[in-house]
Length: 439
Image 1 (cartoon, rainbow, N blue to C red):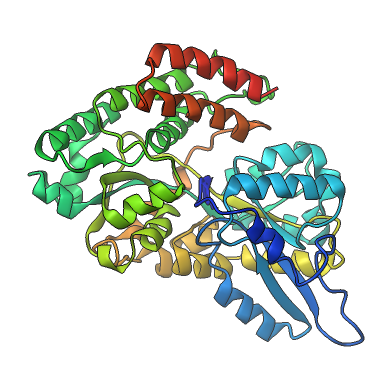
Image 2 (cartoon, rainbow, N blue to C red):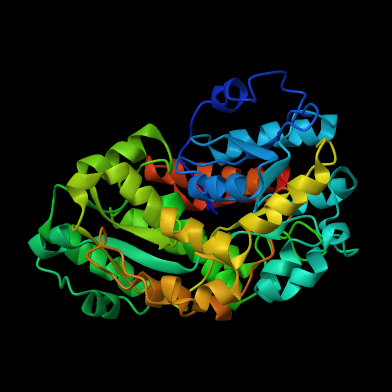
């Protein structure tokens, strides 16, 4: 997942109080990741996740417990935002206690844990290398440290599309058919031009939810087609002021803001959630995991009002996660087996059915349950065709060790532009503050 701070998912993901994770921690001391078990009784494996919708593992837990009667699974963290989750996990890993037996590692943060790989179980010691073919090659590489330790097994990827409110498009005199809508915006400049047409016809609703979501999807797409990285190059050198892909994404975003298209909502805030429920914006950048977020926030009243079209430009990826096992786990072998199950083709298909997280497993991507799937909530959109068809051709983007901190600094300057500050001055602030955050 992704989040965008993803989930993923995520990604990006609905912010909630850090208290959620603390108060749901295993009915006991936060320094203990799970029960040791007594005699022949079952052990408890704690799985740490994040995001408003979680990872969609509830039914998978039941299946696993039925097949492994010596194991009970407790999940914690659902509803917790990625930023709070990652801060807590970083503290737990550094301290060597408190983390779950299985922990989610988001694509934007996994690189920071490379330096602490000695505090994670090398999943290669539990047969993970035999599973290499079960993951997209670049996804496997992201979960592996430079010296070859398997830090995490991939969960989802965030293949890109655009979700839109067909009822608002119709009222504004725009096409509503998803093929015709996708044809409106072969480029991001044409997406902005479409937004200006929408704005001229509809004075009540905004065209996009937020500048930061727009910026992040453009950056990941442009970097995927260009440099292959964002704020850090692949040697972990800070290059925010040297990578033209960052400036391209920033300029497109400020152009969109200047056109008055943004709803000025901070992603994953309470106001953003309310924007879905109240239908205050017409489009949102939509990696696969976002479909679950939209459904969860907009609710049943918006079913059939949302649809999915091709994203401008050349696809792209935003979001996706991994599952790792901290060495602090008292049940490393059992935790590794659970991580392998949850990231198997069966596990990833189950998560896809539950919350729409697109598999990183090639076998799962081609399974009819994914490839031929449609989504009733999104006007029966052929989500398998839209998201899965191009997933094997996604070009990964390298995210450096303090990617999230730098991204937050840049996003804050874009919010300042939304509030009327000079785009030129805020770009200079983005360079300065981003570089400082990345030290």
